[in-house]
Amino acid sequence: MPIAKKRFIHKNTDKNTEFHHHEPVLHLIRSIQYRNPEHLELLFREAEQLEDLDKANALPRPLAGKIIATLFFEPSTRTRFSFEAAIQKLGGSLLTAENAAGNSSAVKGETLEDTIRTVNGYADAIVMRHFEEGAAERAAAVSNVPIINAGDGAGEHPTQALLDLYTIKKEIGRIDNFTIALIGDLVYGRTVHSLLPLFAERDNAKINLVSPDALKLPEQYRRMLEKKNVSFREFRALGPAIRSADVLYVTRVQKERFKNPGDYEKVKDSYVINKKVLSAIKKTAVILHPLPRVNEIAPEVDADIRAAYFRQVRNGLYVRMALLSLILGSKN
Ligand code: NCD
Image 1: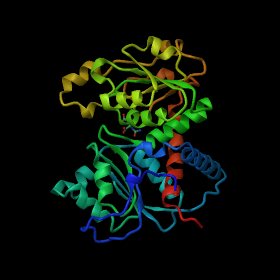
Image 2 (image 1 turned 180 degrees about the vertical axis):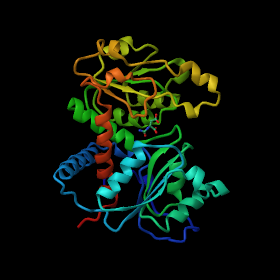
Image 3 (image 1 turned 45 degrees about the horizontal axis):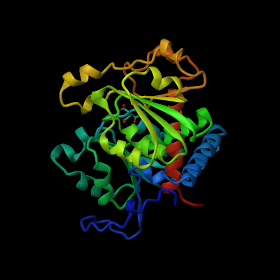
Image 4 (image 1 turned 120 degrees about the horizontal axis):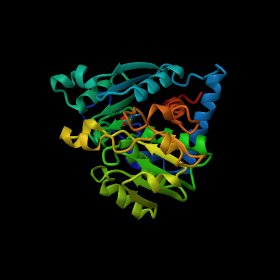
């Protein structure tokens, strides 16, 4: 099984879960669970194959008979739709709470743990997005079915990082020996937090961190990079940070995480990738963005071949299909 990290393969010892069983359950909580290059390769190969099969109208149905719940306590377009499309393309069916914070029993005061225990009675896996860091781990602690973290506050967003890495591989042909500029909100951006541990496992990934002082990478991630001997530098301006970059990874300033709206206003338009910036980067560079974008990439950039963010969106579908089929697919 590819998603191997002991901590997230556990027997549920929660006495309150009625549907108690003793099989180990695989959860995907953090990107580091994919630190092993062989597991990554397997995932990427599976994604490529599923894309080919989809184009040939010949997809298998490994999720036939499975019900997967998408439980979203925070807004989403790409993540939820791509999971839901992936599930249905592979023959599975869905239970959806696209506004779990407003429409589920959370409104009545139900704890996350009780909601998860309940959904355990109906679903074979749960794809969950939540506004609190650590929520996915809390859910996994009481769940007998796999929890797939689709974003936990400013914590992690592992499936996004996997599809980002897959996109880098497709776009520049490699996931070792590259320079990436991570631009924007490094303090709250969970996609960046999930990407960094994966980069740290690669050979010779050079990382340029570009942010205003108020949005600098948190200490814990900086320490992790240092410990892993990853070459990284911090910048306030785009200039030298993007000139040598093979990948520009642009992020939105995470407005919803700011306690004080005035602080958001000060930094919201720190960087804008426009035509002028395009003329300053490598001809072979690619521009990624997990989306949604606000002002950080001007629409005039979209027509440039180096703008890869909508191809990245499409890759998300196949990487999520691959993940689901590896975690849940029937072997026959
Ligand atoms: C990101 C997220 O939700 O963290 N979006 C996504 O899943 N593609 C990025 C963001 O919201 O800025």
